[in-house]
Length: 458
Image (cartoon, rainbow, N blue to C red):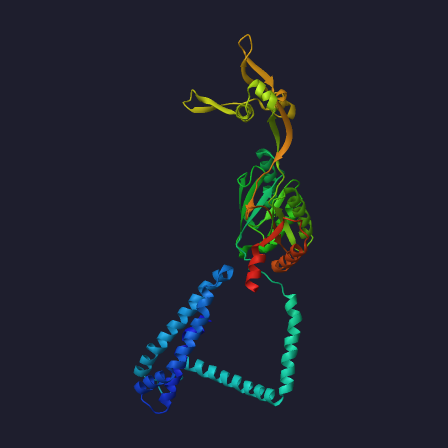
């Protein structure tokens, strides 16, 4: 488009100069008068294009990011074209005299130009015939045009829509999620099994794995560098589908392929129980939509934990505070730095004091821990009592994370799409969300490519 605009003004000015030369004027006079005659029209055309494309460059949102370079490039191109048509074009037309036969007499270029002109003559002759037929049968021509337009409307509904076409970058990524509470050793064992499966694909050149780096010990990220597109039969999209099907047979591993899905729906509110119920129901309904895969919800099961609360009357009797109890439990269960040891090899080693694992594994182990009260017995020894005698201990779960948006709690849902255009699947998700009956105090916020496509189509 810009190439055509760049030479458009120059062509118009040059044609008018040639017309004046054909009228018998000299080259200098033809260049001056021809440019003056058509100058206002060229100015109006150029500035009308600038007036259209400059505002496009400063549009907001995702549209502005796409069209900013386009608008600036077009505006700059037509301004350069205006400069060339008013300076270089008249100057060269006044100084360089055209040969009588132009370039047709040149040894190499001449035959090509003559052949091209003969082709254009045939096209002009065909166009003349078709134009005369259309003017002679105006009703039939109009009926054919309307029938063609009407036939194209049903076809438009069959064409899918996407925000951006997916490119084959020869690189993809897997995010693995294991059950909450999984140890680092268990996660590493599961990930190694996934790596064994991935090595079966000859299209994968490099496997780069990190365990526990994202979101805790029960997550892993595997980056895959693929062989060049020319050396593999499967496209990146087809290979991702094959990997997804193959890894589905590994128990205890939830897999998500890619860096982020085109489907994004956030549920906002302050009622945790209702939000968890709603997002679980929405997840099932979204999963039933054709093409939806790799569904992931930001809300995860909490980490199992024990809640220890001092009994106020007993705590006051023994002189215990929550801060003192927390310090003792942290040292006994989590471990505490007791100093450093200089080994014979000259290395300094940190000394951590902690109860043996066998003494802090189950509920009764924690309840039976001996806690120093800070008082002394008659014989001068420190008084110790079981933890269960001064505190209530309950099983509970700690949330893995708490996310907020607009001063409300947020639970997000992501999903990928395979086997159909993401725009079509996103439209069904949007209709589902709009029709879903929400309890008071909750609302949906749609983002991702669905929101971007809405903005483009608006």
